[in-house]
Amino acid sequence: CIGVSSASRNSELVNLTFRARSSEASGTIADEEPGEDRAHEWGSRHCIYIRAGNLLLQDCDISCECGCGVAIVCDRDQEPPVELLEYPRLLRCTIHDGSDVGVYIESSSAELTDCIVKGHALSNIELLQSGSMTQLRGCSVEGGDEAGLHCCEGSVATLTECVVRDSGMAGLAAQEASNIRLCKCTIQGGWEG
Image (cartoon, rainbow, N blue to C red):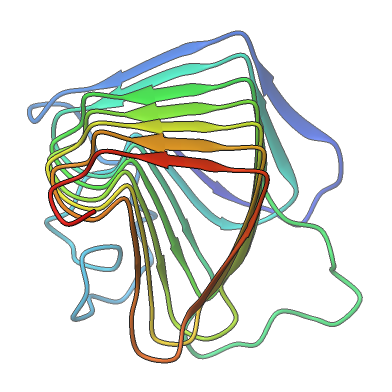
């Protein structure tokens, strides 16, 4: 669908519907080097792919049959500049019914507020690598075939007043020195919990 690679301030996508099917074009940036993980593979397709920038997705409906609904990935060989403390924000979005991860965050940060992330073939939300720090506030993470929220390789997630329920596996999974912080959350159901 779309690829975003801009440090410009105040970029907004409001009240839009995004659908990606396996026959549609990729949101992958053309100059990207192929890598070993799914966010960097040439063959991967994502509905929204953010490499850099301060994008606000507000009141959007996102579904992807061929990859991640939203992939937020910092360049591997480059640390984000210290002065750029801004990151993508999702406000009142619904990311649903995808064939991969709903929201995939690698070596980056994001903020999700009052979002619904549900029904993905893999984890609904996945954080990978040290430096991935995500805040979820008032979100609902529902269903899905694997974990509701999966953090690995030193990533950190903070959930405040969120509901995580009916995951195919664990509602919350933290591996490899990762950390999940909870405040006033409800965790229900799930195969392992």
